[in-house]
Image 1 (cartoon, rainbow, N blue to C red):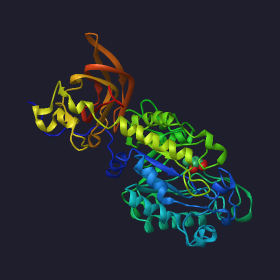
Image 2: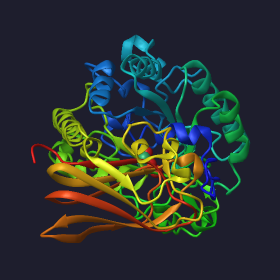
Image 3: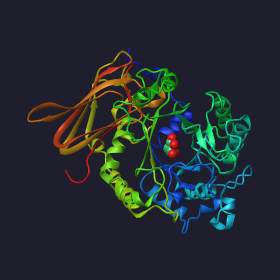
Length: 466
Ligand code: FUL
């Protein structure tokens, strides 16, 4: 009997908030604090708020450029390790209330949140757990302060898509004048309680930290996910405790929990803007490589774009960002498979509801599926005229889990099939690049799967004319 009910889910599954987050794919990190003005990467905590003095701040311009480059979110360092707050927190004087910015009446969290709203960019916050300014850091009173600040950020600025908790914690600092080294116990922050607070105040926000609970760190600050990078993982907390980040980088096939990776990286060597790094801004080519090594492996890309002392993106960063956005737009402008004839070796219940057309409709909510017993299947794409192709895209329908474990891409050339690429994890987005070739037909062979294959997208792309 052919199956006509939907396939059963398989293995660990994403939550609704993770599903929404998966659709963002690439977003911006914005590192901005006293370090921008002192030239440091980690402020000690004794900086005067007076040094935070952007001369020609243009938050709207920054967010406009980020949105125009196709980045769908922005995470602002509301407070970095130095403890200086970009919003007028009622719990500390160490904020821009005491900086010259807008005569002490500024609120950069508000400005970024509002600009994100205007430009259709999701807004998120980074609140450093480590605070090298606060006198009580290391004692319970600081954790109370940290949570009070989190409450301010999660209640006054509208919807937050992601809350970013940094893993760098404890060490030397100013600490209200003590100027000493403070180590903290592993359970110091009582993270489950803090996570609960985020859930109460922003139930749709994903929580990022090295080990989640929603989004895991990719295990390096180079923006490169493992090949493959599974959205599921087992034993990450244990591994991170051992200082072993390899499991974060690749995840675990058929892993116990759905905890996809975020790849964070800066467009320049440091996380904060320093003039002397203006010549070391990543090129559009490098950004393209990072896109394929993160988003193309099912991770999210969190690309840092730090404002300079004016409070604007420096010219080299702006130029690279815009050119990279243009490249992606050109590459993904047209799915060549959508203009071809696509046939599947097996279709669930022979029903249109699960047909191959669902791979091409651009909707993440429809999918092609096979009958239950099937583990090997083929998708054939025949072009009316030979086409130049250089990128394959596959997406699984995530609510039914990560099922495919091995596949191959073949192209017809010189009268026979030749294998262009092999892949394993598919997940939310799998992009394979290969040298451009002109071919009348390609096929995807699904070779191994944990359950019958379910795909929501099949794409073939090239930039420019054939
Ligand atoms: C690290 C921090 O120490 C860096 O300054 C930066 O914020 C980066 C994103 O995370 O752990």
